[in-house]
Length: 169
Image 1: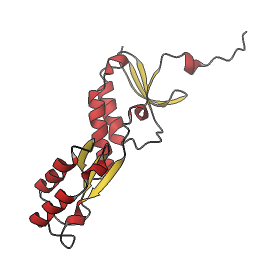
Image 2 (image 1 turned 180 degrees about the vertical axis):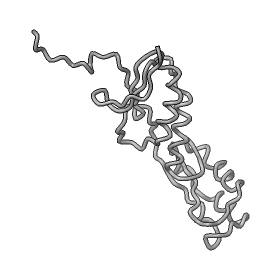
Image 3 (image 1 turned 135 degrees about the vertical axis):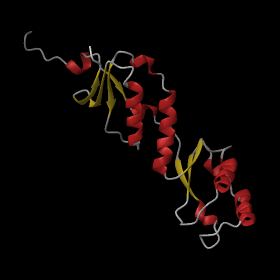
Image 4 (image 1 turned 90 degrees about the horizontal axis):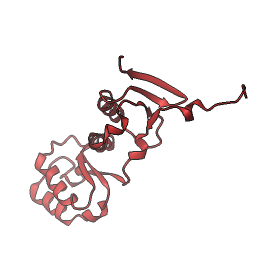
């Protein structure tokens, strides 16, 4: 069978690493701190503490919580810390910033804990085109961690990958 069609992708020794497969489950939620500021600008400690104490933090059970401040008010660090103390027993992760920044923090922690020994001396493709919001920094961090370990590194799909790195012989 000289004209037999062979699936070279399926038969290759390429290893695909898909960040969507390690995307952690859990709703991502923004908590807007300015809602508790007097006239949207002034943090009054006593009133702020009452609002924190009376808030139902259980609604953030198993969520990833980003504490945001869209006002121009300067919020003291202790205010974010106080919210964290109350949200921490329920939320999977609490951070300050946008949902995009929260996602970056989540993926930084995940990638730092990855066991990369399975990729040692292998040709690895970091899968692109995700349906989930994978932050660009995740790809950068993963590249930095994989480069000293892998034989070669590519981005995309096996059928149309972009070569990024290859160890020198």
